[in-house]
Image 1 (cartoon, rainbow, N blue to C red):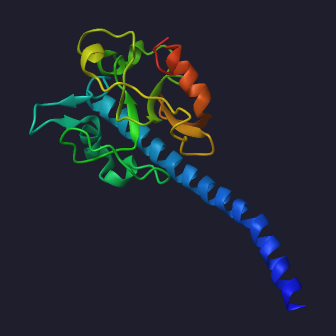
Image 2: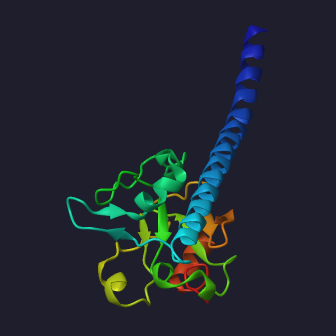
Length: 196
């Protein structure tokens, strides 16, 4: 009888552990979504203080070269907000005091006043992406020449949240999307990456 009980417990454990793991990841996804929402609010507050413009990708030169996350720190005041709980390997790029697991779609945004953003609810600002900056491949000048080369969520690196990522949009809202869909839009240079 004891063996039967042990067998039943083992079967139940085998059934329930994947369910628990999925529920835990769903909780992390929600926590990350909240982070993305807070980052979106900080972007909007920054733009309100700087004549409708979003922050630059970075400023200064080494050893005093700081990243976009540093521009948002006065509004967020907590560097943990920039870290995805499912990734937890933040990019410590340049001399930033706030490493991040999120990528800033900065190319057009940094020089486009908010009044010229055509579809703010569909134009992405921040993505669960494997680099700290995302280059708009059609942009010229310093953006095209110097930004980190963008990487998508390929088969060699699994997206952080149930085959998907969280995206913060220009109007401040954030939502989960399938990583494959977002990456295809990036390759096609469409919204949410371009101001169309």
